[in-house]
Image (cartoon, rainbow, N blue to C red; front, side):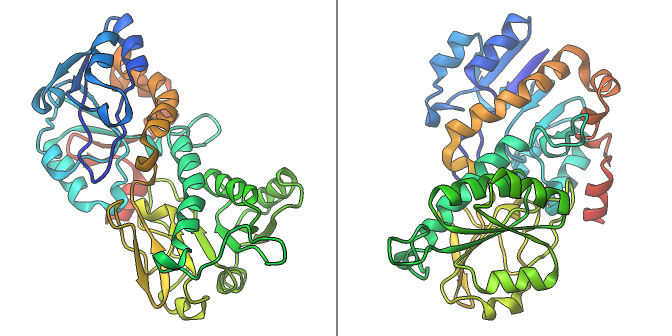
Length: 358
């Protein structure tokens, strides 16, 4: 099968759908890979690297002409217009909050498979996990920067210093992103609280961190009480394919510490905070009611080389499966992979996405 890898065009998005190493494996199995010129140049994967791995370096139109198109981020509207009904698109889609993209993909008739709704045999999200790890770790770095007075924050150092208390961090959600955020925050000696609705997950976290974090059951009261005392709040909740529930209402901002920071990892799915709105790496924060909001929709794009390699570690087997068997046979053999189907033949096929867009 011929596989196309376009250059990403979203603001400051430098990840690339396949690495040269992945290309080499596909080519060795008899597949043809067309990579758009400069698709990975910003992160050290130059045209020569891809060519040496066996790829053909092409223009945008040619990259989008392949039967299987592998990207990272959701296609922008002009990219959607390049797709046709006889193609497979495999990438992050996040259609629950992207009605215009969903409409465009439906109109084009393309078969659109989303990384973020593929599941494994245990019901986990294997293609979202590495980016959740990256975003979780980045969220603490972003929060630490936003807390600086020069960036509008309250001027609190996460780890404090001897004689001065560390910053208080509340992490909403104890999944992969939240756990990785906690690891980074603990490493910086912050005072960390993780709030989750699963008591079993809280037990696991308490054991994993050996008492170095506080764990609380998610209720409106525990969330409100913890948030109002925190210097940094990280939204790390996820409902696969659906819009994220709003855990902090706009009116609660006035109860928070002036200059506190909200980092919304869940912004791709609508955001965990009612006051959130998408931002980009060019202008990552805004201040509302004295609270700094960081709501960048492609956080892992800031560390695009690491993110690309981590993503390819998990996506390549699925790309190989599609290339070898086609999507229908691949889905018949793997029901979890079939959960990735969001759109085909002009219809939405994923229940949570359909509900979110209704």
